[in-house]
Image 1 (cartoon, protein in one colour):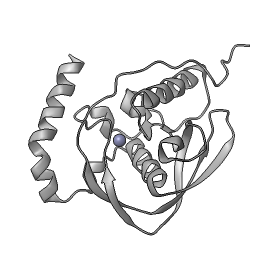
Image 2 (tube, protein in one colour; image 1 turned 30 degrees about the horizontal axis):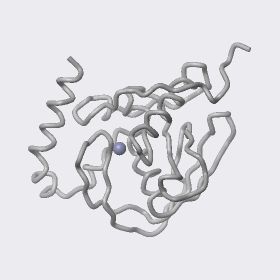
Image 3 (cartoon, helix red, strand yellow; image 1 turned 180 degrees about the vertical axis):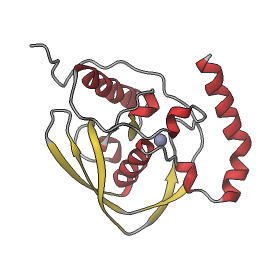
Length: 182
Ligand code: ZN
């Protein structure tokens, strides 16, 4: 068999930090599930689990493809962690404010308003169409990760004032990212 099966062993990858331009580029839609894509998805899952993340977007490990990983178990739900290819928000309902963080912004947590419920459609790593309906933390994670694929970051939802208050800490993260890239 030439195509590796989903279930490829993933590696822990470096998480790209704020300041790296890849976080601002829109991701490319996936046309075909290739062995390279399976490897990226396995790495994404492994990295998310290692970092105890609720979710992770492919550009956060330096890959410009429209794939996210999501971990319902860290939201106390039964479904195992998985990846979603070309995820798309179909419906949202309500709005709820809660604290949010991002693995690309170490130690920064801010209150962000998000829809309370979301319905997301996409493709599973096995190539099947899937749709997920989620609320609360999982809904928040899905919306956060899907925004990553559009080059949008959670700090974009903050007020001018909050961002100004965070400016020096954001600069520190940018400097750290620059250092790690050299
Ligand atoms: Zn994030």
